[in-house]
View (cartoon, rainbow, N blue to C red):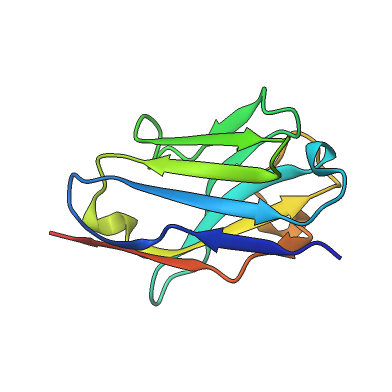
Amino acid sequence: QVQLVESGGGLVQAGGSLRLSCTSSARTFSIYSMAWFRQAPGKEREFVVCISGSGSNTNYADSVKGRFTISRDNAKNTVDLQMNSLKPEDTAVYYCATSRRTFYGTSDSKEYDYWGQGTQVTVSS
């Protein structure tokens, strides 16, 4: 069983920045791909970004490309999401997820085995 704990959410004005962090309890963290998903009120959960176990490969949703940056520190078992130029439409609960089944990560939420509890990000206009 792997536990994921997110932190760093909050309230920010449009154009501002936030940094989310996710800490994993996985013993072999570097073989797990990691991802961030988000879910806005009344909407389905959507893919944001994923990163491979090594950190060499990333894949971003078009809606966040150029504004968000994912990184991971395999020595600390953490993955971060730097969010810049935030927009009101980025408002959502952000979830960290991990998978041992896909080393490079995927946008398919069904491929992720473990999920964090979520952290709220609210962007005011």
